[in-house]
Image (cartoon, rainbow, N blue to C red; front, side):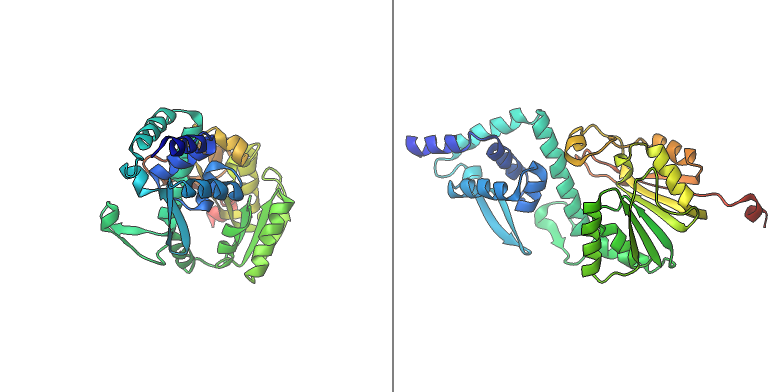
Length: 323
């Protein structure tokens, strides 16, 4: 590599986003959508940076299962064609940058990408990549639908439904689903998705978690999936969830255990950095629910986010309990 080529490469890498890209691709092969989610910049910007890095021979791409994945080019990692000194410098930078807030945030989002991959396309066999056997079609989504066959036709409320993915999954086995979110734009997208999928047993309503537009004791199950940490008052939100379920009905939630990833406040609008298991138990019991259970639902080594699952039952009236 001559001086002119080296100068061009250093100018190319004198950009914070491109250095972050290189650091991520040194750790994992990633596609454009995954990189967009991690970096928090527009997809067009990610594609432009990747194009520049690819033209310089720093990044390679490969097609797999309908996606294009990018990674550090083999010549760079192997130090071939004069890339050895550059790779040494990059590795030194990656090591020194690892303790920065930006790098820790990138690493946290990278672990979330890995978790989603694991849940949607399982691998089994050995732990080494060369020993893994990929099984197309084996996914937690399919298993969730299969388990739905065991459930009766319940009346369900999906609280903080977002764009409606869980709502539509619940509609497969529920008699009726009431989907509630505070954002009219999000509800519009969710309703459009349900229309495209020809789902007709969902009622969409705008409302706050702390003041639900639902009658007392009118549903069998109230779901809160990654919604409670967005509530201004988690205690009020759970009291409202308990109010709308019938005696003997359940409040079921999935949320994050307490963590230190403060970036979720600005990037995702989170009000709370998760909940301790004891704290979540107290909130559910404070809402008047009985038989409260809080457990770890998903945890992965190196991932700062641990998922908790929890449930509680609205007690039967004294008259019903005697009978």
